[in-house]
Image (tube, rainbow, N blue to C red; front, side):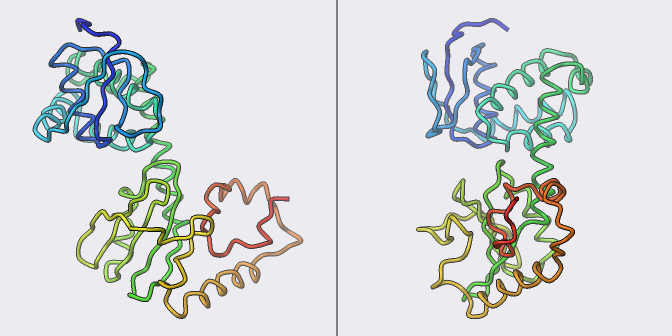
Length: 267
């Protein structure tokens, strides 16, 4: 690849289609990015020329097709999952990976775990999937006055969209909302379809994850108390093993658990 502007910085809307559009322009213009940064990200932009790229679904689709042609559909899914980590370095990892993928013959590079970028991409996707798996067991719903079951989460990775299919299958006849308080958006299921939503104001207490008092169902506080009593009833103080507890349920996932109380001190 011929490098024309080695200090070029790309900015985009933060979506996967937006990222793939950046990839399309970088290849089309034979430009080597020094950074690929979502607009509005709390990241210092390096010095150099800045190219702001508007998302094009058609150009993103062409990049996706190119990935499938040189690997397979599962590899597109791998890229999507890794992209959701949201770490600043991930965009450049994906760029290096795609650059190598398109430079190699079809069916070879993407399986080469000896390549550092292939290995790093696979490990990144594994970390995201691991967090999805953990949150499938750690999401705690609360009932609102409107008979919607709402849950607040604060994940390290942008996993709420990956969680949605699991809970849709688990609760197909209920209205529910899983809301990412860090990224300020959620997925709402109306018992028929999934929708991405953003809530105005602070619908959840950001410290406890509780629904604001004026929106809670009348019996919600009662059920939260039951959670705490249940935990205390099954907890055997003499056999408490904080190390094993943290291994099975890492502390960063405790934030919004209703059963959390004084007995959750780590000791």
